Length: 418
Image (cartoon, rainbow, N blue to C red; front, top):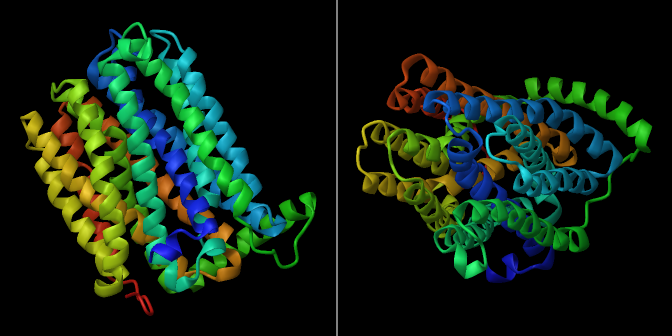
């Protein structure tokens, strides 16, 4: 196993997850929701800020959902998945760093930059996910996919730990206060992401594209291929059923990642405690993602996902009843145990059942559905928050997505899934 994971292309591919996961931890899950409430939306009603945050996440996800299958198809036909990855990565890096300059009360500017950064982050992941077939063989997908996620949790967690330390002890870093520390954290994310992207650029080789097209030809062929892919998915029953299931359950996963801190703030917990709980998730998820990749060989990849979804259902109900901050920490530990597993095994299961010569466009559909799901979840939470002014009802709105998604997944037939 160690020889496999230290292969230069695999390790370089996984390092990209190490780098861009800093955006998911420090920005998306950690400091953006906190800063959005206390700094950029200062003086606004709590339910309104929750709605704004939910709608911002929904808008970003919608943009990626509309773009993902198109750019995936074009990149496949043009043999340029790696180029597209770095175009979107550059967008995410620049926009993340630009959050440093947003002044107090400018919530609209913060939302605009955040939406653009999220598009860059998620758009680059369309091509990052699809390139697993360039670095691993089908019988290695489970372990390599889990390794990528575990590296992401570790890399994102390490920088997040430094960023949290900066906010707790700003003087140690030559900073004036916690506010400046959060602002500088956005810059560190951009640098971390940029540096970790270099190995993939240098050492991951994209497999040759059959009938590669020049730029204009790739666009034309890409759109034609996209139409063909939609038809093909309709004919590939396991792929169609899996995508329906994934669209539902990953919605709940992403919504929890994006809005957990905001939920804790609504319950009255200190933001510093919530950030520490998120940090705990990263370091629990690191070994646990690897464990799921190993365990899938024995229990099966589909069964592994179903186990993780069962845990999500129980924790969603638990979350709606918590009243003490130690319970939030308990939730963080439990979520950390399954979060990487459900993400990594979903990616490896999908890689098993799609045509090997159309990974870019098929993963475009995969990411499109994930992002459309991310539209529904945050918007649903935002609407319930506005109507009920009850955060506990908002979190329970996620539960049906796990229940129905798991039910649909049981109908997916996977050949050699263990």
